[in-house]
Each structure stands twice: as C-alpha cells, then as structure tokens.
Image (cartoon, rainbow over all chains, first blue to last red):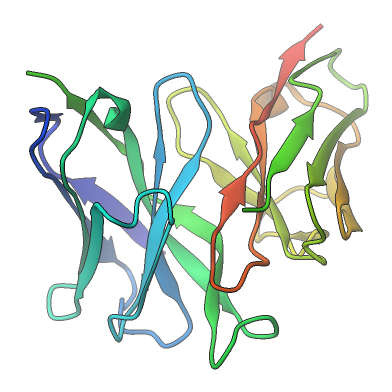
Length: 129
Length: 109
C-alpha cells in the first residue's frame, strides 16, 4: 500500500525559505505512470495546488507561486521536495504531498498530471517571527 | 485560470437522506473532474475521477455525473461517516493549472 509522509520544519520566519520533503513508501517514485504533487490548505480554507513533478524531473507549477517555488525529486531516496522562498504569513498552511495519475489527451507533447491519490497526512507550516 | 464554483457552501441533510452537491467550471473541462472528501484533521480522500468513476474502495452510494461545465456529486443515502467537506478539482488545462472548488460542507440536519 502506497504511503506518503511529509517532513520539515513546522515554523519558518518571514522572508526565509520553506523546505519540505515527501517520502514515498510502498511503491517507487520512478514509476512512469505517475506524477507527484504538492497541495496546501491555509487554516479553515480551501485547497491550492502548488506544483507537480515527474520522476524525470519535469515540473509544472501554479503560475501564482511559480516565481517562488522549486520542486525536485530524488529517486535514490524515493523522495520529492518542495522549496518556497520569501515566505510571508499568507504561506501559513497545511502542506500535503500526493501521488497523481497522468492524462494524455489534452497534453501537448506528452502527459500531464491529473487527480491526487493517495495523500500524505499533511504538515502544518507556520510563518512567524 | 479555470475557476471552480461549488454550491451550496453548506448543505444540511438528515442521515439516510440524499445529498446533491454541485460544481461549476468557468469554462469546459470535458470530463476531467475529480471529487474529494475531507474530514476534520484529515487529508482529502479521492472519491471520483473522470467525473463519474469511483475510486478504489469508495462505496456505491457515491456517484458523480456531468461534463463540460456542470457537475454533480450525489450521496444516495447519507451515513454518519459522510458528514464532511467535499471539494471538486479540474485537471483539463494545458499547460497544467489544477484548480479546486471552494468546498461544500455537508452537515447533520
């Protein structure tokens, strides 16, 4: 059974970089069938897609966060990571990692990520001095 | 950006009754739509993908329908464990820009 687990600091200072890692167990992150994504949820609010990565390193980011986000993959450790720079209080949220399937029909030149399943349990990151 | 609008924001339903949740897209997403259930303190769980295909292990009382811009999630007979927040998500963009609806909270009447 595939499981995902987020890890990283629960408190980050304003203007610094938020760094999280998602460790995948029960399956290989190098599978050609899946993408791997990050989603966040501010307290009491809805869900926001941050970005997705394929095992080859191909990435897609939410345009609203693109200038501050980097997602990377380490296939040797079966992990993928999120870095979000120049954080503010607005970045306070529960951060989730998840596996994604891939769709082909509407994707130019290849595949692109679709739904999220399963999800990690999530980790709360608070931005505060 | 494709904006997903869910209605109502809150739905009050008695156990055993039918619940109908709506999700509208600002432009067509074909059938590239998923539904999730989220309980307090838990991560979302995939219920439906492809607008109408139940995910593995999801009870038959959950059904999805629709295409284009109008979608519905129906829970045929609400059980106590179904009271939660439900989100829709589209995945029809190129380049990908995945967006979620604001959620519908299903509460006990």
